[in-house]
Length: 407
Image (tube, rainbow, N blue to C red; front, side):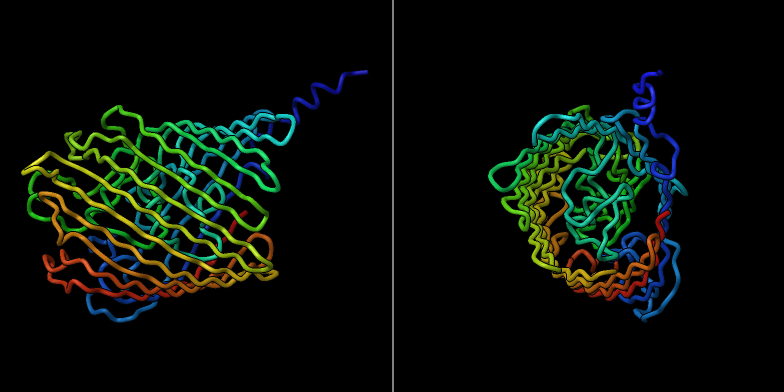
């Protein structure tokens, strides 16, 4: 009789099967007003601007995103994730979103170890899920996690260890990474934004109008989030404690250790960016409440009169309550955000303060299709808007209806 070992070994490998290959898509109907979006060269806080010139509310359809997702399994412990993404508004038709290997050794007892290596987002967001890194209960993530998505993608090695403690569980995550030296560019020049545009491996993100010093000969008009400039590895660490089944507490620290004087011939600059993030998830019955708070600082350029060209502190926080139903959810989120700029060339008129409210509903239509509706209102003040003929105080309302397909 043949040994069953070869069959068992063969079953551990899955490369191209219905379980390892998936596609997803997102189409929307958009209605909005307010100033020009940052993606179209303005200071606007949202992804879309349907009639920014006249501030009229107008409705239009948009094909927003498509993803091809491959999650092969090579052995019982070794797997991978590869995601190719096409995004509306991205400078490349198709680009690489994530690409990493995952190692999950089978250990006795309750201890779990997970390692990954490659290109991925750090584990900061409480809102995003899945290999396509999409929010579930809203269309637009919070300002905190929109920034993580657009500018804090790393190439590195990460390890997570977790084990039971008392009646709960505690986990520790640590990573060393590169390819994230420009993190801070958008938060300093543009400020916070609320959108679901994601950084990709080779793409560029647009900057708003720059002041004369940076526009003349210093800073490129588009920033590349995934790039290595100084060969100085960064690091992050996270502690995750769930004392009970209904409460999860998290603390995260990030430092890219970037050299603020590093620059390429195409004027991509290194930024020294550090931040701390805390989060909590409270679950009770059909309700779930999430909260996150972030504070950090980013530096860039040379020193003049005792100050670097750019020295920007940033902070943001939100609370979101979600009521889950049998086939959907309803969510409400409130948040506040701000930056303080005290650099020698990027002064206090580039600081900002703002707030946003989001109401959203999700309905699952069968196994592969979901419908979402979201109303988002953002109000912010940034004095630098006067340089392009805008009032410092601006507000914007965006209504979105989305159909999401996952096969």
